[in-house]
Length: 95
Image (cartoon, rainbow, N blue to C red):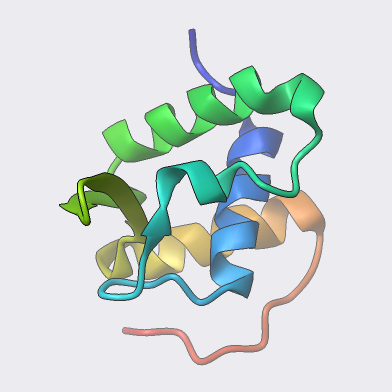
């Protein structure tokens, strides 16, 4: 099942707020914290979809799965979050 766009945007926005780009990462289980427990399954589907679409990079560190945002998809991530939240993100865009 495909995750809906708003949940994907919320996950990406949370990771952007914590500046989890490239080498900076967090454990996968920490990514769900802060979301309503009633939508944990939807968040899991969104994370899975974002990983398949290469928006999120996974790595095994300290025997846990860690995740970070893919810096190569920087512009696409910014556009998706701006579109969903109807905001303008004021950070320099990479070429």
